Length: 356
Image (tube, rainbow, N blue to C red; front, side, top):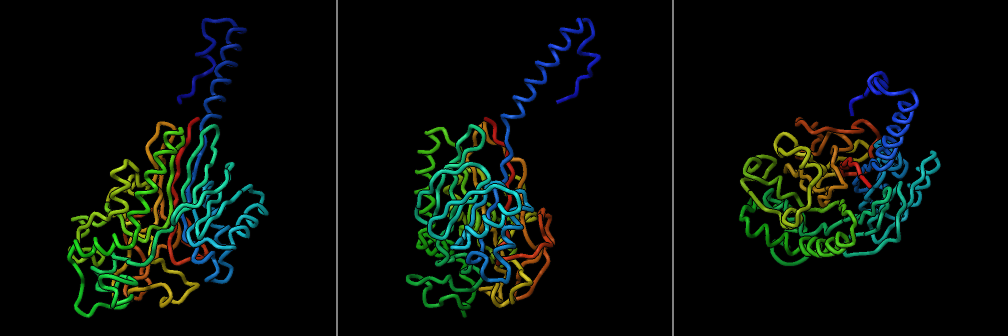
């Protein structure tokens, strides 16, 4: 809003009227300001609740605090979640949490009781006068089909390619798109997302905003495109990954990819992150491949009350590529790139304004 000088306001009217006009303008400005809230959504896989590196629980609390996050979705949450919240609140903040299974939601805004859904925790968060149905997700890690084009087994307990476990496939990359899609479907991840879409639709009918965040263990349909077919060991595969494709078809917005449309210049990799508190061997599952993918997301359904402002990768610039720590050379915006890191994933921060 352009600033209006006091002189232009009072010109041609009495002093009393001027004061009245200024008073009314000030009240209107205050009302407009009070109706808009900042919502910063952080998604982080905590690597077994921050227990895999020394001091990891405190590191997670520090990341939440330093990022300015006000709504946090934690995958691989554990009994350490109350400890994370206690550390935050001991620093003068006021967070609450809800957890079911290995997902947790931590919120600086009032939060209702949690509901357990398959591979998700759901809770209603109230921002100002607006209710948000918040879903934290951690989808099935097996049948990790993105490894097939990289000549590694998908860790499937049964079915196609199960004989390889997580090991290298001696015959080379699997580039049959239909086969990769079948293995991905066998994971059940797309079905989980389809159930979420139905549940989210009911929440939207109740007048609530919907935000989903978490570790999908599946790449984005927006990232495995013709432009990236010969990059990152995709080995020519162009695939509409079913989970993110279903969300896109249902109108959901991938916050990071909306802000940074190019998967070439802004790949936004979240896995595997380099972590100097851990040996490289504990960070890679496909040591002879470029296994980098963006598998951690924030999604929202469009609504006039919700405006996306920014999205960033949170965490180290380095990733693991072919069993080596490699600095990312793209144009992704990184936040907290140099702080001690507690996990094998990078996090994602999406910033919104909420009106109402």
